[in-house]
Each structure stands twice: as structure tokens, then as C-alpha cells.
Amino acid sequence: MRRRRFLASTLALLATPGYAADDYPEVVPGRALQFPRDYGSHAGFRNEWWYVTGWVKDSNDLAYGIQVTFFRNRPRIADDNPSHFAPKQLLFAHAAIADPRFGRLRHDQRAARAGFDLADAAADATAVWIDDWSLKMSDGGYVARIAARDFAFDLRFKPTQGVLAQGDAGFSRKGPIERQASYYYSVPQLAASGRVETAQGAADVSGITWLDHEWSSELLAPGATGWDWVGINLSDGGALMAFRIRDNSGGAMWAGGAFRSRDGQVIAFDRSEIEFAPERQWRSPRTQVEYPVVMTLRAGSLQCVIEPLMEDQELDARVGTGTIYWEGAVRAFMGGREIGRGYLELTGYWKPLKL
Image (cartoon, rainbow, N blue to C red; front, top):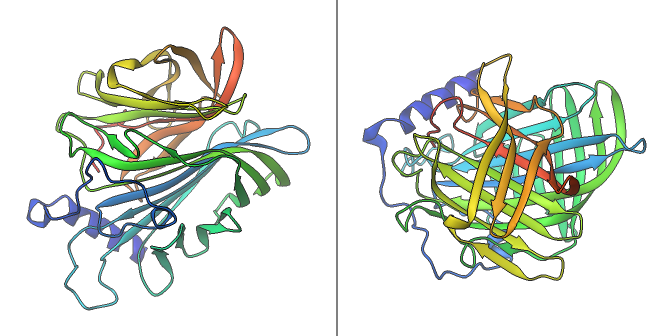
């Protein structure tokens, strides 16, 4: 409870104009991604997140959707405070499992200020943790360990392909002004293996997942309300990512995406080449929020239908990051044939998203 009160107070300060700061590092075009450095945290920037999603299955071929996300925020309210208790960096984490037997999303969240080795994000490699929740690089891949209230993960992710730089060599525009951008890369087609535990029991699982890493200092453009994002691991070994930033009318203020073929050829999509067309809505019985859980996606000459593993994959994160959104396992179909599996994220449908 003390931690929750602290975070509520800090988030209130973030919303106070007197605490605004304009000297965060800018995201600029032409900066090449640098590895291994860019696997790690970029503590000077305002916001950053590491995001692993995907499908795994057990020995009985039961499919699960799994999601692990760590967020880092630099609030700029205590940079000059010498106290080790000063909230110079805030960390948040979301984890969820989509299990059709349960019928709705199981999810949990953590939040903490960085410090005392209880929570932090390392600069030299992917290593971010809050207590016994962690996502860390290990043996050329990644390991996620999550001990939630209703489930637990101990999963390993092995790259089968190289990094996919999003946008223009990692510079990903998110709005009409050039500085409204992030540095952004993905690692699709991660081979997952490990163990999942729920109230229904424990199971060894394997599957294919997707990792995103993104950092920025800019908030959403004025008038933006949220975004739709999808990352699909294609069955032939390719990868497809697409997003749109929505305006007050529900239209696309900005959009982008990328396709990598199974032989490694990459196409970066212009904003005019991306279209999300809702096909079916689902209303949450808990929040009464409606989400377009079935979409037709057009990305350049590609067109597919996105359908959820199950409809109820709403995540209520008001205690942590202060919002409610839909994030769930989906299948992609083309001409009625399944062509891939991935995750769809729908934000700003509860109320306009404020970062």
C-alpha cells in the first residue's frame, strides 16, 4: 500500500505543469542503432519499454498467449536530490496470460522506483526487474521470470533472426512533427520454451514470440487519443508490424509499419500504406469499454484479417500506468487461411491515453 501511494503521488506530479521539463534527449533521424549498447536502458530519455508477446503451447497442444512488459519512466522531479530514495527512475511491469480454458485474461502488475537493487534497468544489456519479476539477456537470448498472483512464467527466448529496425533504420515517426518519434527495434520469431503455471496446473510449453524495445522523450501529439498496434510472426518465417495513432475522430493521425520476408527482405510502410478497418466490436462486462477485436489490416499490398484467440483480453492497469487497454493473442488470416500469429494492442478506447 505504501508503494501504491508513492506512485499515485508521483504520477500526480507528472501531470502537474510545474514539473514539465524540456531538456530530455531528442530522438533524431540518422542515428544508427548500436548493439550491444541499445539492448540496454537509455535512462536519459523520458519513456522506454521492453515488450515480449507471443503464443506458446503445452504437450496437449493447448495454446496460450503470454505477455511481459517492462516500462521505465524518468519523471524529472528529483534529478538533483542526492537521496537514494529519490524517484529518479520509475519502473512498471505488466504480465498476462490468455488461457481459453479460463475465458478471460489473467494479468498482474508491479511498480517501483529504481534503487537498492530491488528494481532497476541496466544500461549495458537488457536487464530490467522489479523484485522477483525480471526480463534479462542470457546466453544469447532472453529469460523472463514472473511470479504473479494467479500465474507464473519461467520462459526462455532464443533469437532465430536478427534485429528488425523499425521506421527509418530505427527512427520511428509517431506524429506529424519530426520530433514526435521513438527509437524502435523488434526481434520477431523468438523461439520460446519453459514453464507456465496457473490454477489449472503447471505445463512445459514452447512456441514463437516477439520482442519490441522502444524509447522516446516525446508525448503523443496533441489531439492523439491512443494507438492500435499489431506484431505478427508469419508462418513462413516472415514478420509483419503495423500501427496507427488515432485522433479524436477515430481516424489515423499517423501510421507506419514494416514487413520482413522469410528471406530477409524488408519493406518499411509509409503512413498512407497502413489501414486498420474494424470488423467486430467486443464490450467488456467489467468496464463497458468497446474494443475492435477483429480488424482487417492493410499494409501496402498485403491484406489480412486479425482475429483474437479469445475476446476477453482486457488489461486494467489503473494501479500502475493509469489506464485500461486491450492486449491479446491474435491470429492473422488471408483468404480464410491462417498465415501467422501474434499480438494486438488497443489503447485509448477507455479514455484518451496520456503518457
